Amino acid sequence: MKKHLFLFVFVSGIFLSGCSKDEIIEEPVPTPPETGENPEEIPEETPDEALSINFFPSETPAFMVDAGATAETVALFYNLKAISYSKFIVGQQDAFSSFYNNNDGFSDMKKLTGSDPGMLGSDFMFITDDQNNGEANNWFYQQEQLIKEKTIEAYDKGMVNIFCWHLREPYEGDDFYTSEMTAFQKENAFKSILPGGANHDYYKQKLQKVAEFAKGLKGTDGSVIPIIFRPFHEFDKDFFWWGAPYSTPQEFISLWRFTVEYLRDDLGVNNILYAFSPDNSYSTTTSYLQRYPGDEYVDIVGMDNYGDLANQQGANLAAANQKLKVVSDLAEERVKIPGFTETGYFVSSGTTLASNFYSNNLYQVLTDNEINIGFMMFWQNSADSYTVPAPGTDGADDFMDFVEKDKTWLLDDMPDIYDLPEDNNA
Image 1 (cartoon, rainbow, N blue to C red):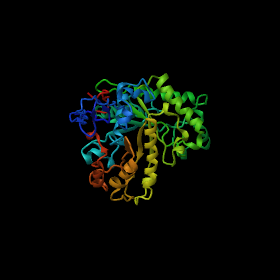
Image 2 (tube, one colour; image 1 turned 120 degrees about the horizontal axis):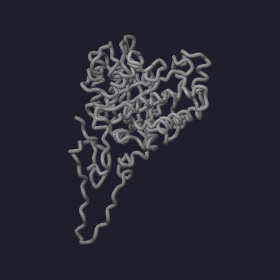
Image 3 (tube, one colour; image 1 turned 135 degrees about the vertical axis):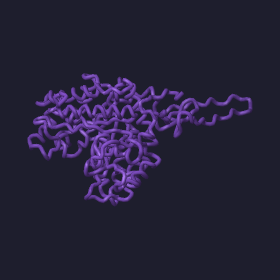
Image 4 (cartoon, rainbow, N blue to C red; image 1 turned 180 degrees about the vertical axis):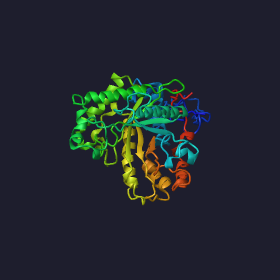
């Protein structure tokens, strides 16, 4: 059964915090003086005077990329923002379709903890592949249908859906890693899909496929399913063809803005939150914002970071925390949702996991220095490695300690993320 979201909003003398909607805590009302004199009028607090979340639910669209977003998408934005002040949702990429040792069935997180993750990560890669011809016997189309099925399942359970996009380069349509591309492809792929570029129409066709898929996502309640979309992730590095060495900041910004405007304005997609998620190469707010397309084009500010957590002695944890602090502070300043959009440590037969990697190292990164983060995402498990332990594997007990921490939320902990409360929380 879905629970109602408890939020940090002050209205009419009632303060809702860490309790269910049925456990409202009333703030004490000052006693009027007994002198017979009229007490001074006590001004009603506005949201930003009272609490960290500084807007009412009804005001949410004004802070979003898409002011005409669906009701469920508006609720998702507001609730993720509200959650970030006290909790963070724990998610995993391909949790319903990729398992350690190919042990399918329940998600590996549910096998261990008894609960599914609170977020499901998916990828537009196969959906937009050149070889996806939309026919029932086509492998790529079958993957599209599987992803759609899992996205609907996640929504129906009350989870959040987030999509990355390993878009293949536009000349041959085969690769996304620059290590597998020719020098010409690396130098020209990104520039070619800019407006006026040789492959711009090709890129528009891929966005049309993204739009068709996104608009076709319907839950069993009949609602269009909101998704988080983080295009061009890890763009500050050089291993993807959309990486920083292959475009100027202005070219990157131009394409990001075109992408948003084409999906929202031309193709009428109103169920997307847009996430900006570089990798970990920045260290300051200035460097983080070098390719930032503007507040009007971003709903979520995030960071992907594997490298700073790779050292199992914890040598780089403070650096990782500081980078996440940049994200947290920007989200507060600009009214965005803060997220740790990808992370994890890949445990395999050739690696050694610190005994407290999850409950200490990772949790320290996520919580030190009064960081606010709405969600964090582990990458997928696979046949021979994992970022989320399965039962009986190294780190399983420590992961249980991690998910039992005060701030971590799995699906079973979550309220109804798609319900926007009334301004008065009545």
